[in-house]
Length: 219
Ligand code: DC
Image 1 (tube, rainbow, N blue to C red):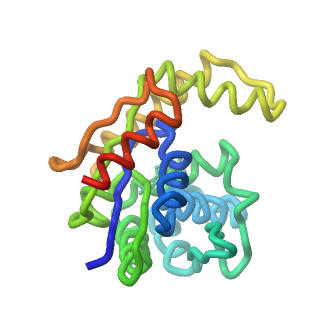
Image 2 (image 1 turned 120 degrees about the horizontal axis):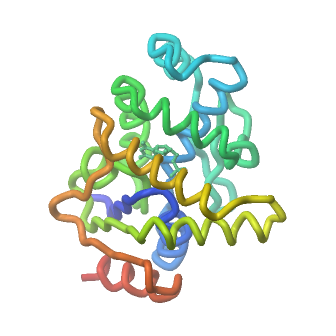
């Protein structure tokens, strides 16, 4: 059986930073499933499809070829063969991704693609439903979280470093709203798998979190 590590948690908990580092240390492939929903979000924005029009979003999801490839050990997100890595990190794309990920049929299609990716390789996969739905047999499941305040401050620092004007209070409100939407949607809402270990990173450094996950996934 392949070696699978599942890392779930809310937006801004540090999943991708941690998952990437753990994958590198362990020589596993890192799969960022949020990037797949983001690529679909980008497709919807480009084609002016309203996220509230479920039938149109499902048709788009069936038509848009969203896949993941690896170049020099880095994940590349492909939308109809175009590398969209540099285009999917905006707030507008994130909001579209969040809206379309609430549609059950969209999730079914994405989960199937993600399971195919993990079928024949050892992966660290991060997202919202990896331990509960995508890889229920993963040998190590982590639920990574931090308080909304800490997550907002991390996001704020990131944006300030990039020179993007932003407001800490607004970011915290957006995070709380996104958590609410991700945890209350009917289709596989964000929740901790029963056999996942909860790691609250509010008072931990990145290195401490990486060390903790390394320890948990070795055990
Ligand atoms: O992790 P992220 O911010 O890149 O994810 C973007 C959106 O995609 C997020 O609002 C929730 C959704 N998502 C999901 O529903 N299931 C996943 N496995 C990954 C992401």
